[in-house]
Image: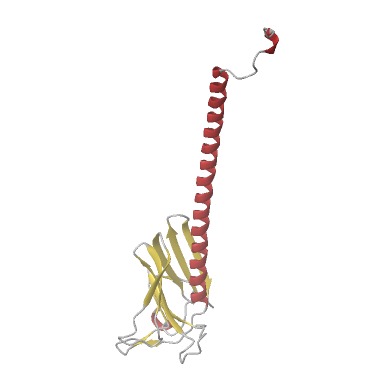
Length: 197
């Protein structure tokens, strides 16, 4: 007995299957490109956020050091006195208060520190003692990478900006303010002025 023509098989033809696979492939490729672009953008955003957080931390540490400067002169390994703040246009060294002593060691709460550009980064130097000997070596820590330049200026009590400190009769005192300008590759020029008196 013959089946009527109205009861043909309901399958897909080869052309229909190929069209469906092609459309699915195009949609999958488009979705992959979109997800890859989003992933790269998220990675760039994360890296920029981390770089900005490192910049903020470096500026906060520099600010903290400068705000806690004290006027105590220190002894150098050669036995001569060095001012509490010894500053040049591209680096400075100073004595600060507030060095936390968590282990209750027998040491001062004053700390000798310095800031300079080392290699391609901003470096913070610390000495283990305030009055140094030949065995007192500085420990250098790169606080911020990718720094192109570092510049300090010192405002005297007459209101003039200087490239060095101390100046003349003000050797025993601190400047009225210190300006720090850091040029970074990622964020450009960052300027910070800390008023001391």
